Amino acid sequence: MGLAMFRELAADPAAGVRIAHGIEVSRGTPGADDTPPAWLTELDGYHPCQPAELPAGFTSGWRYSAPLVHMPTYLGYLQARFESADGKIETGTVSSLLETARDCGARAVVNCAGVGARHLVPDPAMTPVRGQVVVAANPGISEFFIGAGDESAELIYLFPHGDTVVLGGTEAVGDWNLEPVPAVADRILRDCAAVEPRLRAAQVLAHRVGLRPVRPTVRLEAEPASAAGDGPLILHNYGHGGGGVTLSWGCARDIAGLLAN
Ligand SMILES: Cc1cc2nc3c(=O)[nH]c(=O)nc-3n(C[C@H](O)[C@H](O)[C@H](O)COP(=O)(O)OP(=O)(O)OC[C@H]3O[C@@H](n4cnc5c(N)ncnc54)[C@H](O)[C@@H]3O)c2cc1C
Image (cartoon, rainbow, N blue to C red; front, side, top):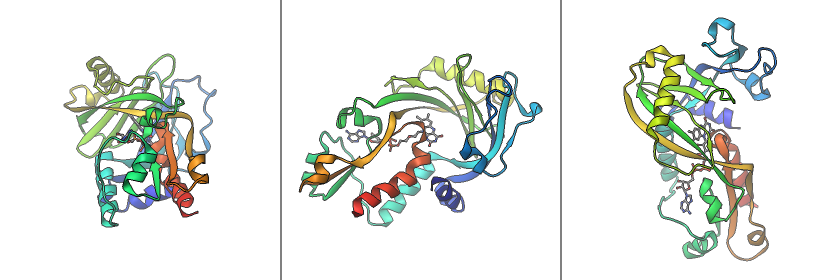
């Protein structure tokens, strides 16, 4: 469902979504990990990379086209769409889902607290996987690049968004630090410039950190006690790890189905 939705959104310039071309490469033994995941072959333009397309140090990969989302634009678009449907946004810290639902007189509350669910639910299965990125002025890059991390090297990616390019990345399990670490930013810039020499004199515009809300499985269900009782219905929708944007529309549809029952 997500792929169909993002393809549709790519037709709306306000949504911040476009279909981008690029490559995803790995350092594995040639031939040993050349089998693409099933979803990849559903994307337009999919084909294995030719050796000449691979930067130094990478041994195999795929070229494909996929929806690329500029998150600040997309979140603004979603907010406007929600408000035009008479949705109201209030911000604040929630310490109890049940009490919040009662205080608001709500029939139901949907918990989308991400890694915050670890303390809010509480759910000890939730783990932050920290990601740090550098936002730089785009020196003319039009294609995305994803170089998978492994035991020999870290994750490297470049996602161009018009005048800017997002450079990554990191996957630090259990790290709650929301502050950018300068040494990590330097490593990201060095690795990205090795893949794309036009980034050697990159003008850095911003540093960003996010926590991927990782859980062994996504939790998408009604709180059993609330489903059985007369009180507000508590629905959980968290634990999407590094795929929460991809999974968002499908999970939202499933939550809407639970609300309708
Ligand atoms: C560097 C990086 C790269 C990523 N790349 C991709 C990608 O390419 N594709 C993809 O699909 N996904 C990607 N992700 C993952 C994606 O961003 C997450 O899966 C997604 O944001 C999860 O959405 P969420 O709404 O469940 O949680 P979040 O986005 O974490 O939002 C949770 C919200 O709940 C709020 N909150 C938490 N606790 C409380 C509380 N007690 N009271 C009030 N508010 C609370 C938080 O402040 C936050 O605003 C990436 C993540 C990172 C960090």
